Length: 69
Image (cartoon, rainbow, N blue to C red; front, side, top):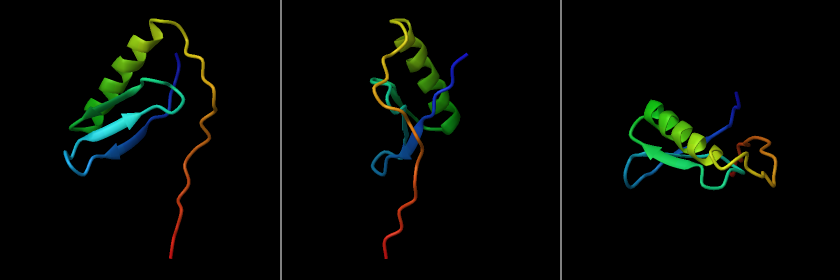
């Protein structure tokens, strides 16, 4: 079993959740709910893994909050 971290944003124009997995080219999806987004991302990753394990050129470290006065 593999685990991937997804970055999730909400599109201001459509109101849809948009998710992507850093380092994993082509692993992105959108949906109306977070549960649906997770399901869609899982399906995309499963499809991409059919071609074999991806070659990941970078390492995802995390996120940071940047405060600007």
